[in-house]
Image 1 (cartoon, helix red, strand yellow):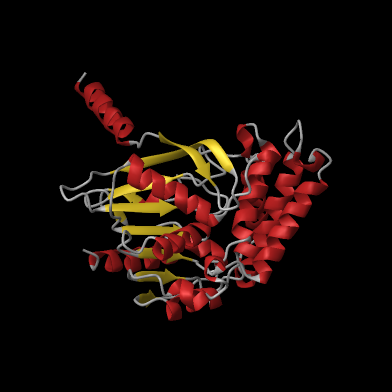
Image 2 (cartoon, one colour; image 1 turned 60 degrees about the horizontal axis):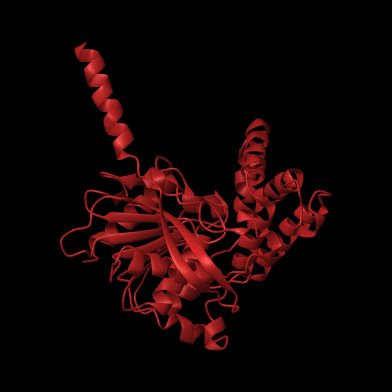
Length: 344
């Protein structure tokens, strides 16, 4: 009986420790292109507790094909984003997860949103939904770093630090070409029907996932892994993409493809990056061939307070979300812990 009771208590603790999904609604949300959505839904989760000063919140933003669970392995008591210290907010960006997206019914008629639209929706959540006036940090990987950098540029009075994993200030030509190929492969599926499909074109989505895979790793990585592992990883990528609604994935990649922090500044990258007042931790992957290190170095040279370190890895772009127990994951953890320790 005691054993059963102990098991029940442990099970209860595990269940109650899991973050619950919450929803924030904002009305008549105006997108950057002038479109208006009468009701915009933002799905999010929080872990940890706000301190008395309400100044220990950290917002984490996922990559292009991810969702609010992307950082789950590194959030919790004693972990990189320590919930004994921080109030951690994870959010589904516009267009995916449980936030408003084309799959809700609008399909091709859903507004063509941007990275800055994602940031604006998150700003509404943080300021109006959670009633916070400051964030200890905003961080993200890949697309999440795009969003985070926009936070630092447009809300410097609110953001006290930025954590940018495999970042860039804009989508460079090779990334844009990759997106064009992904969307073309999806469009070649006969089920696509110009995006007004009745059956989700899952075969096109699967092929898009396979096509994307070589870009998120490096040639050295492909050289060293055995063929069965390569086949397994390709299939995993294919399955992951096939879980998406096609319009939602195409729109999401379209937002990343159009990313350029300089756009609101007449194309002046120096002017855009000079808006960032907060300390910035910049962690590109040394072997990244999707975004590369040049963009990360532009951020380093353009912001006022930069901490820069390249992740030593042959994982390519994937190093930005390496497992905690890997050398890359340990390197990232050490860098983030040391950086956050200086932010008060």
